Image (tube, rainbow, N blue to C red; front, side, top):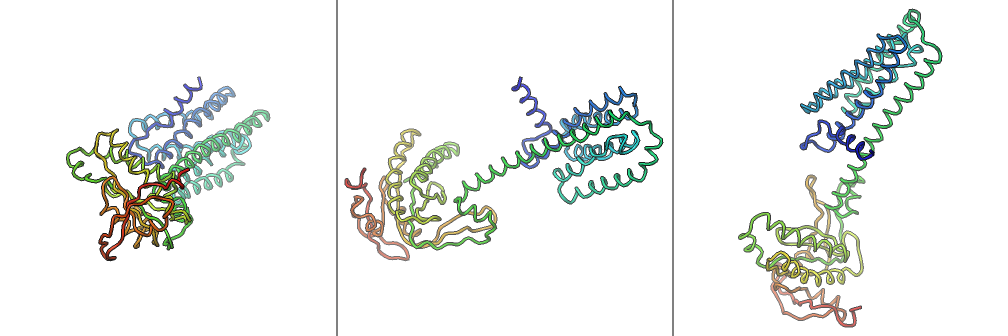
Length: 409
């Protein structure tokens, strides 16, 4: 039974929603549909009660809302015209409670029926925004003033309801309005929180969490100097030629499988993924959070990337040979741009690491002398010799072979 009710609720909330709708538009549509359905169902009580009390004129008002609501919801389901549904619903919520109050003889005889009308400016605030909601709130205040002016005449000419009935309707009106407002706002706030959490998760996937939190906190410019970091580059040797012979779907599948594995390695060893460019992968240890063992962390990740590439090559049927470059030194880091912004690194540490990878050997990890010095004794190296680094001249390089026996736990 609960499953059926859940499916029915989901179908109702999805009424008029289109795949092309933005998340906030879907939320507004669902909130309005939920409000309309709740009030339509509750209006049945008022319609039936006024008929039983011999007040057919009063009964026509909640029935009129039900008719307007059903017609507008059906129209919305067929056309997706949210603007008309919104205007029809908020206008009916604003005007009809006052008409019902006047038909019953004013504030006291109607048990303050006008309280229902307050759902209109509240709804406008959520569904339109602050500026448009002012018009509905002004309408609510205007009708309240009119009600106060004409109330003595209405009360004098109306046949009063029994005290017990008036008390019952006070309870029903206040309780039902509170229920509708709370239910809709609770749904709206819960949905907004889920949407904000999804946005935060997406932002944290794009930027380091620390950097994302600084941006959310209002920091306009993020630019940090890091005295010592380790930068890692990796790519697939000969990938351009292989990709030329394959389709887009296959290329994306292979890269997604490979980079997902690299992401897992980065998480395991505490590196921050910076970006991918084509088949190249860049990560850093020691930024944005400084750490003393950044060279060791980067080396450990590099040692697992090459065999990971071989393992994935066997899975996807591509001859993936991973080439890795690693260097350590100072770097600058920050966020650039205002649209599609990115966290990036600059400096000699980045340039040298890139050259280590570009001039490397497939299936091997080429590192600078600075890395070899930092890890000497704990890791095994093979000297390759000197290579020319544009702008920096000749640099002594090594191949990283693995951890030394003393360092392996």
